[in-house]
Image 1 (cartoon, rainbow, N blue to C red):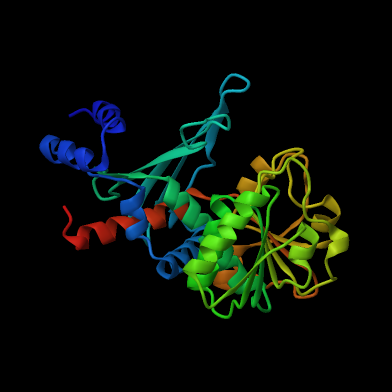
Image 2: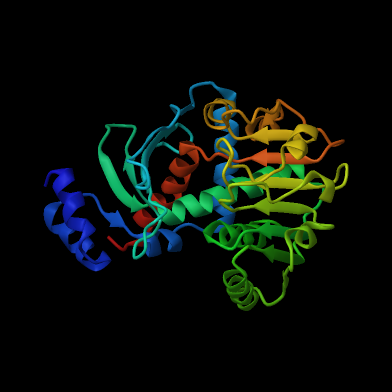
Length: 337
């Protein structure tokens, strides 16, 4: 069956029906979000993403990753992007096709599909829903950065109440030792309260706090995660000490859409996943990049301990690729095919 025909057919079928169609057609399997989640444990994912950051920063050909391509659809409609990468250490090629339609009502605002190919012969191995992989690998990158930039992580602050807020809470609690308190704040108070309640039930040994304000949420925190789509700053320089705090900035960083006050970025030691990605996406919000996180992982650069540290996370295709490798390896060994 032609792959385009297969994609069209699977879009309107249940997960079980998709598997039946794939089996009958001899087509590669489609793994939906529930299957992906079951095959993507947090700690191995953080370790894999950490290695991928180091592989990328070596620039030795072990990672091939062009800058993502994207375009906006007519005003008020949406955005389409594609991200591809080859990882030699993970032995995989992966391409993510992603759409963002902010006005969607009965569909997710962000939807994505990952195509996994063999680097040995180019054959298509599998298709995977990309939502869980995107959410988890983004949070995994934050945990990896925190490993190398934070002096401690017992008090975690999360600004936001959406998918990335939950993913960051889970990632730190599952793959980072020593977290004792998690504070959450979001503009949507009801959604934040629901998230706090859900996480409290999921992790009863951890203290969760629904903060009254963003400033109270971050006061005295060791690690701060900004996970919103705010069009204006939500984290301000005057709220924070001179050093001893690490920030993972995950939300919008395109022109006029940054979660961090420019003065905070100017005085912090700024790190990123990819200098090339930062240069192509930050626009006029220009700040010196101290190092890529991958350089810290490999030891080719050292962190500046005398300043607040900020990890500007843009997300890379190689992170999707190594996450997809974990899913594919788990699927192959599961006997569910």
